[in-house]
Image (cartoon, rainbow, N blue to C red; front, side, top):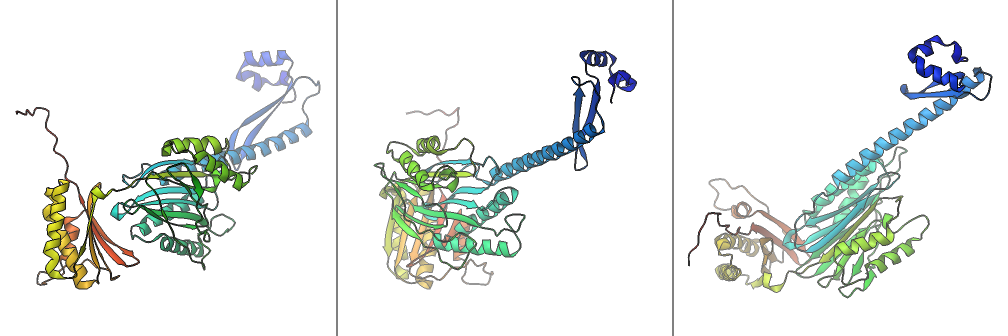
Length: 462
């Protein structure tokens, strides 16, 4: 509209406002649509009041070009924001919402996505048999929805592999094979066809022996904070990142005193553009060197010292303070390699349950132990050892020197045997097998009896 004085259609829309605009001295108008990818996002008005000449065709062409570029930029920002929000939502939904109950460690954790694009960082706490716990931290290469989805697949795989009670190095080897297959199937980490990759650290802590077995695949080394506050960076062999293949992983074992803190994290916590990674590690070590802090206080100290205002990478942090399952909650015996001694072993177990006040579980426990010990003597090899753990559940473990795996059978009505493990499975909440360097362990868990709660109207007399 080169002359707003002579624009009856424009005046008709709002005569009072149009008169005020013209009276202010505005005499020419260009209205250009903000249009990107076939969608109108809005409109931009250019008004002229200072120069007496009206807008011409050159001004109109410039306005169209300027508004067209602005529209594409705005649409890109809108699309990026939507994808970022989707990736953050997906990432958070795939991370653990509530950590599972377990007695091996006290845990504090933290996760924050990158400001510019969510990545594939994750952490996990996985209860294992024998009151042990698995601690995991990992990082998928790349950012966006694909990295978050890949993280979810790897986290699920770690859960599945950990249920097999694999040592840390074997678990990472299987995870490495999975990443290679995902890459060969065309599952690329980026639209440009970049090779999929990830890093991971997996640790298993045993509160009975206080040993912690760890292995890492190209991940940042863990830190160990002793009860006296001494903080060291573990010299755990690095291993190659997941997906490269061809090189083995190595497990290292540490003995952790009760109250020690094991700190797992991703590189986004210690690495920044304006700070060397060694400086970040030193700041992390300094922030953790306080013996009087619990995991939550240690987490706050670490974040105060290292958390950037605008993180360029995802940050995951997991701090676990070790507990110990004391001798009063563990009972173990060496069993003679003789079927006639099974009854004596049942008697020892019954006496121990009575000492613990778990007489209600005596019959079931004796039956489970009888089957497991008989199987170990019949199909396994010496030495045979029995262990009872009183924790959140009652765990019965039978160790033997053979690596032969037992199999659950569903015996026919005419079969004379084959029902042992079937009975164990029916009488237990969970059961399974894990392998040791000396052989294997067959374990079964039972729920502890719930204490009776008196009704509100109950009366007691002495």
